[in-house]
Length: 334
Figure 1 (tube, rainbow, N blue to C red):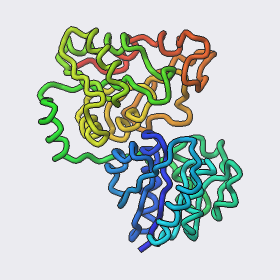
Figure 2 (cartoon, rainbow, N blue to C red; figure 1 turned 30 degrees about the vertical axis):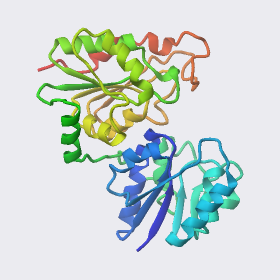
Figure 3 (spheres, helix red, strand yellow; figure 1 turned 180 degrees about the vertical axis):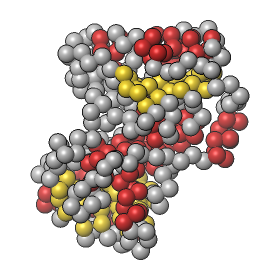
């Protein structure tokens, strides 16, 4: 049995975009046992990938070196008999644990002076591989090739967990479900205004849709603000579900409106009808990879700026992207 360790991405969306890589590794080695080591908050989507055989917690906070801790973790991994490690982040820190673990083949892109930690170091051609998912997938091939067309990420659901979650939250699937995802972990420059989300919700509730708001506990206040602006009942589920439960609930949606966020990639991987809103970021690197997804952006001269907060203090790239544009992106109800 071949054993591969993936040093996984730190963001939920990036973890979703790694799924085609995992699938390609299994196709190349049918007897593969694949372990993914990533931050605990990404495990919810990794658990919805049948290609992942085991999960390990990557316990180091962002930006923290902790050489003794990484050395101890590497020593612990030596006994697990990994044949290869594939390091998805480009930082020097992320390559230390496989090196300490003495994993025979250590694959990743050259970056941050870490070439001495990798013995299968790849030079990244950003023009040939413009998308993050392409870059991840190319690491499965010894020559760094990426198949065309790019296979989209896919997640599976757990029907039993889905039913339990619906029962626990007293949710029904009798009426059509629309989901709003107003959060974006990176920062406020990626968040469409709550009032715009609320205007979409008001229109759809008047048409008979039920509205669910999904997100983390940090998104609960904006979910509450949307609910305050919508006269009909709206379920603010931010912080009330686990990520695994959010995946299962997202699979029930017939419409999704989301910022450029991890849940955007979840909706795309579940092939939900989706409108993705881009302001300070760009869909050229991490777009929602689904034929069911439509990207809306204004393309102002000041965007994409890739800043966490608007450096011009107006956020026109999202404030001027009106609710009517989102509503028009979905077909009329039948």
